[in-house]
Image (tube, rainbow, N blue to C red; front, side, top):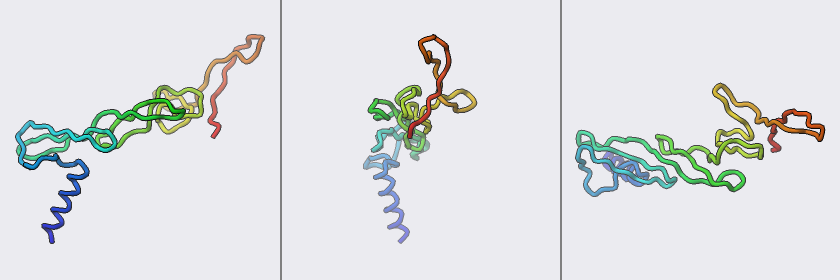
Length: 135
């Protein structure tokens, strides 16, 4: 029964891309295998001491963000992908930078409402306006 469980586990890991797809499980030190995952991330393993070691995932994946704009998603070490980043935040009721907040700006300490300088009337009185999401 334990052998059946081990074979089932190996087959599951192979189909998930966690093991190299080679007929020979032996490896030569320094050999690197790369497997492109279904989400577009690249999983890498390296042979070290005759055993395969996981190097994690890397890469970026194309995506379509809010408003139909093209952007990228960054792959994490665990082969997950971040939200679609189509560029810096602009006031458009979208999460342009993929940080999970709509129409916000980011500085080194916190998120804050996206604001812009404006000229609100013909008398040229300066001012500013703050963008608010219109969920």
